[in-house]
Length: 468
Image (cartoon, rainbow, N blue to C red; front, side, top):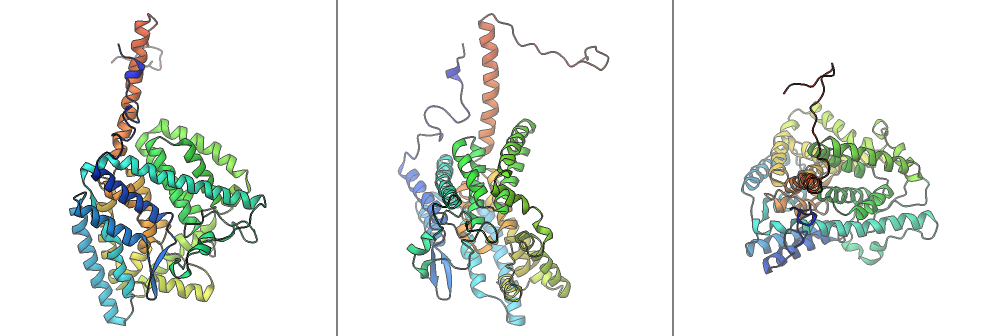
């Protein structure tokens, strides 16, 4: 007879929740170490940059490039052939159109053009299938780091709110200015005139980036169906950031999960969101977030500067010079335009990743680059929820086209584990568990001599039973 202890739980057997007993071989430990260092470089070291003449390079770039090269040398990583082919074509077209613009009017930033393939080439590789079983362990480490940093963000906000502490940029006091990433709005108040600075856990370049990482970690815990306490801590920290982009990130990911898991799961999530959201709106932070829901209609709001005005500028450019539809305005032109607008109006317009591609390289190169991202991050992803939400954020929420410290979160959570259907298998195991549990209850009732569940055919409108 089947007993409760015989049932397979959705998280795996008693041997280990990771599918195996952890990193048990030299190759496992090697891959796990590299991915852990990458996670550290994009979180704890996010604000650290390497000075290169008049520009800076994120420390995560040499970490990722060196890590991938190390894994390739040992045979722990392999080429993603389809992504590589599309990447080569996309870069060739991007260099061609950027070169045409440089020759035509002398504009274009060579540094931006070189950084594009340098930053994105790591997405042309994935781990060897023999290392796929490490995925959940890697994801758990990312969630653990973000849960700790979530606690830091909550403490930042609470300490300021009760008057026990005044915000001090600890990282700025520790890291030399030459190695501190510039050009980001790292610390600013929750609203004009407030003495409370938005939560950023000290180590993130901006509260909005912190919020997006928190949202990704929350989604990850929902995909794995674990870590309720950690998810709650991270959700509270997300509210403390007062960031609309983080909430949009989370909402998009939950929408993807709802499509995958059906109506019953969606109903539970909607009920939880109503309760939690209603409670959050009773707080001063919730009311501030609510007041920002109409930002896109205000020309000087962050919502308009992020989601409306960049595309208005692109449409204006296309109308004035139709050739820019095909070849763009040159590498770095989006940043130059943003600087000009800020100098003239004081408004920090924000070109997202997709808007930058359209502005700088034109439609053909943008389409090819989007195809590369699809093959490198989305197709055969270990978690469609995490990959789609991450790509959505990179395309529409942040100007992360050349921000590896933001982009590279997709490496350990999506790109490097392509071919491993973790989320699909986890959902299937959950369905199997429910069926086995139901059969177990039926068998237990039968052995105890109790009444068996009876399935009654649905009644027709006139009260009779429908015929099969």
